[in-house]
Amino acid sequence: MNTVSESIFRELDFFVVSFILGIVLVLAYDCLRIFRRLIRHGTAWLAIEDLCYWIITAFVIFAMLYQKNDGLIRGFSIGGIVIGMLLYNQLISRYIVRYITLFLEKIIHMVQKICRFVFSPFCRAAKIMSVKGTAAVNKRRKIKKYFKKRLKNMKNEIKIGVSKK
Image 1: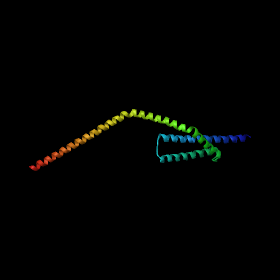
Image 2: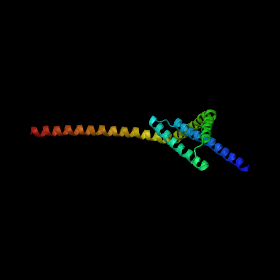
Image 3: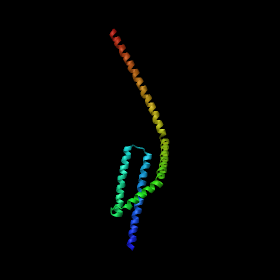
Image 4: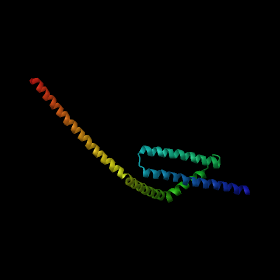
């Protein structure tokens, strides 16, 4: 009699672990979705991220099945994973993604403002130096052009003076 209840508790434990694993897998995908909302990227990167996610998910599910049930795939364990995924996705996921994304965007915005404030004197100084540097280069070009023209005129005057004698 004791072995039956022990066996049932073991199966229940296996089901609960499968259910929690389903929740954890969707939570991990939510982290990926949050990352995608914060940093937008192209279709190729999305495909690579999804491929990596599903490969890791397959290994995690296999590791759980191997540890809890000696690698045997049981219908109720897959059902537990699917039920956990669906419940979490339908009840909590959208709020987690939305509010964590908003929170992180506010933090990023605040950090950007702080960085702009801290680095604005350096940016202004660099801009001034750039403008002054450009002005100096332009002056140097004008001076060079002026002296080149003067030397050419002097050369022509010397040629004319030498040829007249």
